[in-house]
Length: 477
Image 1 (cartoon, rainbow, N blue to C red):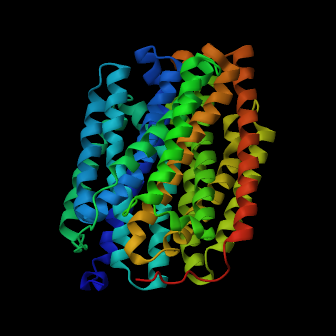
Image 2 (cartoon, rainbow, N blue to C red):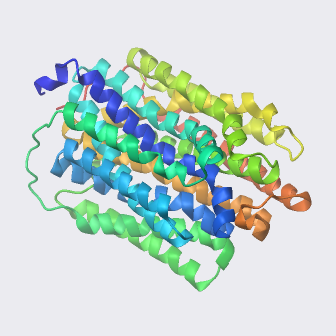
């Protein structure tokens, strides 16, 4: 382990990569509050507005594993700094976009940032904290960044939209990226990696990207185009074929992006599946609650962000606690506690949500869901990363982040299909919904919350059965 791992600046490195994690994940939901005013400016359909959120997480989910492999080959520091540059350029393109099509193109470029930043930053944390208990706490704090970013996104975004308009949620990223890049360049150690013995698995990357993209397209566009239409059926065939071919490719490639032997570790598998379920619920609920508050309740973006603030406050308070508990007791208890709270909060939100309910009456339900997310996400990350040897932490972190981003993608897509399937074209253009349209939207959200509660319950059962007790063991290295 390099001497830099013991340097006092390890804490600064942790701060830099955690802030980058917050920035990369927050943008998905910063934009959620900006979607209704953005839709009114561009006169965009509800499906197009759904793509504004989902194209970002779709690109991240489908390329994140490839980004982890690229970081292992190029070097974690270089991958981290390059990712910040891509994110900044994409943000600039979005801020200046004159049409919805060019905005979506900017979102694709912006998403290439987290593809490199997220796996590189977690691998950097593993490098600079060699002690297993210190590493568990550090990974817990880093993992809390994603929850804090997602939870604080609506509040931060709402304030910006009210102050300067929706373009401001993209422009604000530019100075932040510049500061993080400067600090990262000066403090992150450059660890020498062994040269790769095999060529990059380009076929695997292409197959995974095609499979995930086709699946998301099917879910998002199925409502508008018809579930039995030729293009949707073709998307299903492409998704199934590409993902099956990806599995076959990984089994025979000498240096796969995803080592199939990882899937033999039950704790690794359940940590990734559970992380996907939490992000499915968390992201989907926040995105469509933000839309509910603006389009059904008639709240401003700024007020919407404040109503959703209890999500962020609870995640911020509970995530560091989860990191400490994981270092002392192991990940199992914090994950079980978090999933239990999140499931209970989802059930309560389904029971209480109504067209006539005052938005301020939901704050404690939002806080309960945030507490569940804050307690469960950091130990899930610890479980996934400590299940592998040090040489594969980049791969493990990429797979874990990809599973969470896939959960985000499917959360927005599936919950959107359920909600918009009830609301129909009335939701186009981000306009205010009244009467029967508002009732239909709320009924769709009720059905989506039931789906989330069932998935969280299944994840809870899986963790109880498969995640071992005790502290995380040091990765073999």
